[in-house]
Image 1 (cartoon, rainbow, N blue to C red):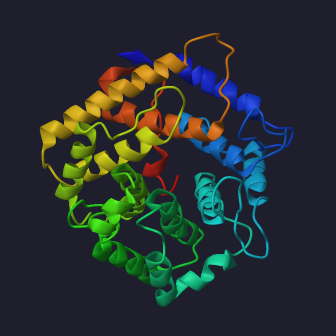
Image 2: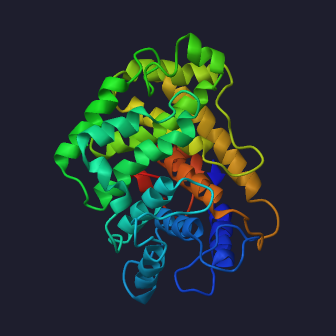
Length: 332
C-alpha cells in the first residue's frame, strides 16, 4: 500500500506557487511569466476538482469563470493556447468551464461550419490518422467536446459523429482509424502503435460520455495486452506525463464492455497501477516545501492517480477519495 498524502500536499503547494496576481489565474510553468495562462488556469481547476477542492460557490468560483472566459477570441469563439492546436485549447477550456457550470461568453463560430454533416465528415476524414494519430486526435475529439458542451449542436449531429467512428473502427486492432494502422503503408511509415492507442483514448471518452459501444472491444483488448507484453507501453519514470492516464483509461473503458482475457487484463492493470504508485511515491520524496514545475503534466498524473485509486483501492492510502474528471465530462 502507498500513502499518497505527501504527494497531494506537494500538489497543493504547487498550485499556490503557480497562482498569479490575477484572481482565478495560474501560469503553466514556474519558469513562465507571472501572468494567467490558458493551460495553467484550466489545469489548476481540473486538479482542484480531482482533489475535491474546486470552489462550489462564491467570488473565487466567479473569478475562475471570468478568467477562463477571458481566453476566448471574440471573433472566432476559439480559445487559442500555447503548445497545442486552437481546437485543443477550446475543448480544454470549454470542458473546464463545465466543471464550474459555466459556458463560453461567445458562440464558437470558428467551428460552426462543422455543424453541417458534409463538413463534419470531411474534417474527420482529412485528419492525419496515419502519421500523427495522437496529436490529430485532439482535433477530432476536441470538436465534440467544444460543440456539445457549448450547446452548439443537437442529438442528430452527435449521431453523425458516433456513426462515423463506428464505421471507421479498425477491425484488426479495435483502434481508429481503419486503413491507417495496419497494412503496408502504415508499417512502412513506422508510427508506433502506442500513438494510435493514445489517439484512440480521446475518442473513447467521447463514446463513454454518451455510453456508446466500442465496435471491436475484444480486438482492442488484444492490442493493449500485446503492447504491454512487448514492452511498448511507455511509463512515467523521471517526470510527470499523460501516459498512464491515456492507456489506463482506454483499457478500463474496454474492460467495461467485454470479459475477453479478463484475468490477464486485471493483472496488467494491477501491475501498471502499482508501478505508477511507486513513481508517485518517488516524486513525493524530498523537502516538504518542494513544488512541481509544470501544471499540465502534473494534471495528467493527478487524473491518472484518481483512476488508479478507483481501480486498486486496496493499494492506496489517502485522506480523500479522488474524483475522476472524465466521469463527469469528456476531454482532457
